[in-house]
Amino acid sequence: MGREFVDMFEDWADSYDDTVNSRDNEYHEVFENYDSILTKVAKRAKGRVLEFGVGTGNLTEKLRKSGHEVYGIEPSKAMREKTRTRFPEMKLVDGDFLQYPEFEHPVETIVSTYAFHHLTDDEKELAIRKYSERLPKGGKIVFADTLFEDREAKMRLLQRVEEQGYNNLLHDLKTEYYPFLETLKEMFTTNGFSVNFTRLNRYVFLIEAVKI
Image (cartoon, rainbow, N blue to C red; front, side, top):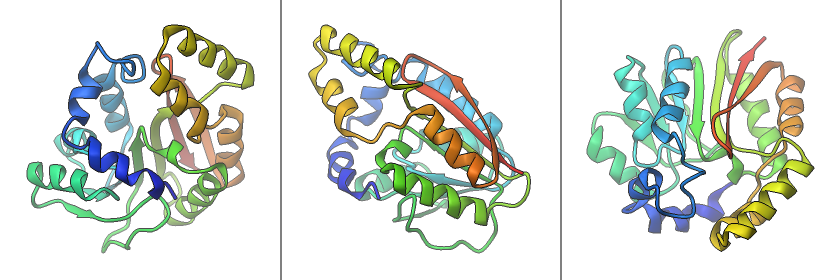
């Protein structure tokens, strides 16, 4: 359920914002246009929002500035503490994409950035099914995350990263659960969503699904 990555985020909490804003590390293309990506996700949200993988609160800030009430889910204690420092009155709890407490009010939008790939494909399917049951008609899922268009695109990207000498990034791309676009599309449509994918940089796509 993505919990195997919690220790990584515990260690990453103090330097996360430096990483996503840097142009000098091997992940710079993954986080290219980071601020714009968060803005695009926030602009597509409507109503009360449930955010998974809050991290240090960067997307949360944009959502709140847009007038949304945000319920936050974050499995890393260190990351939660970062966000609580910024938004002490926010409803923020320990949880993950599949296990989280119920809140007092229904939500209309579920959002996440750079996190859904921490689930296996079976877990992604289960999560989307749960969200379909939770959201009203017209409710939305808006994610931004790394995915591969197809197997050929994956192999081309892996070769490029290997040639760049980005060994940590290469390891991540080979071992984490980055999905294929068509696999995700089928998961959403099977569970009652219409879905669109928009490329935002070399690695990241905007995934916008609407409950039919």
